[in-house]
Length: 556
Image 1 (cartoon, rainbow, N blue to C red):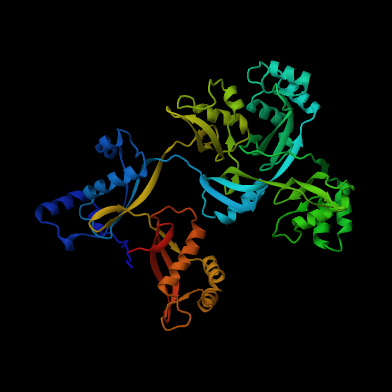
Image 2 (image 1 turned 180 degrees about the vertical axis):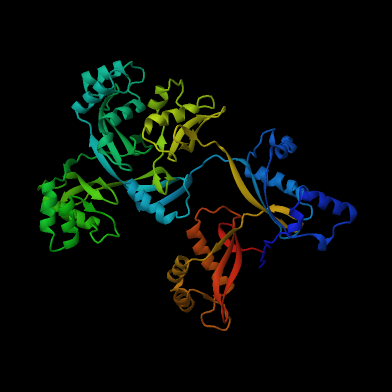
């Protein structure tokens, strides 16, 4: 196993004076530089306009690198010329401009996550290393709510959109359905129907909830209804590319009298939670709270106040919750054998969320209606009109404060095709400014075996939480060593000890800990892992691993 330890000392005389490289060049002219004359240096450097110009042929005359691979070709050559006397073990941290388009991290959860609060809790625990600005495409299960539009609902949508879509609205109002023949002047497109669902129902649902919305249609054939599966993203409904059948459920919203009845009936069984719900009129759903209501308790509570029903009836129960802030939740129950049981239909969906100010949220996703309102011919931005995105945010967030950040998802025509893009816009107190794809970034390069190479080593020292994870993960595999490290907080590295941690055992540990720390680490990522060991006295030991073939192995 090869261990590389970089010296952090710099020979001060070389980096003082007006032009330190003059002294170096003089030395090179007067005497060939051999091994003992090379130094192990550490430096920071920022690319200048002159530097980009020197490589304009490779950079297409722009002051940025089109991708990291190109940077890794140009920068080592640049460093070889810039620092000719730097030798083995030297490091230079280079700052430069990079084209870095935001792309979402793809994840899958086995849990059922039916609200933004659920998604936030899951990602906080499973993606702890995510930084602000990270986007995630999370595939997960969600409870499917349902609602069928009445004739009056369709007429109400027609009335609200009559000035925007006169002929379609007139037809919907007259026939109490949506015309779905695209050849008709009264045609309702998918986007128009979603717009109608938003003006009628968006305020009745919470961020993250998924609803099967059924409505009457006319398509000239035998289909008389259609169902859209939509998800509320905190701003309105977005149509999902999934299919599901809606089940008709009776809506029921708990009243203040219901909360009082629940509190009285369950006071003996759940004194804390019952007293809390009677006092505040909401269920505390924080699992860390002494007043926590789990789902079984909630169903027990609902059975106290819901009316008797017919076998197989469904009730969509809406109730107040407290999960750090006050909100509502809806749960579908089915009446079976004289009581209500969970009747939720679960459906697999993909939610796109972004981390902003420490929390996960849905980005604002630009809709067809938005692009139409801009007067665009096509439903997308381009390089000539992307500035309108920031102007739109002024109306969307009229009370923004300096430092606020808005996460956005939008369609963009790049000259060849229309693509989905993700980004964030910053508010400086006066205007919003979308962060460009050209960013200033830094990367470390190291001198190894006579050449400069990208060095992506992440230095990480084990925390107490990592030690606890090791103990719980390996207690059944290595009972003695795992119990010992959990008790003392150090790995026993004495080969004659019954609690000895071999290099192979430690490599198993690193695979568990790093995968928890950085589950989406790319192939070739390196770590310098420092652990506390016991060899007769307590000392730190650093071991070096790299991700190869999807697993962590020691660097050779």
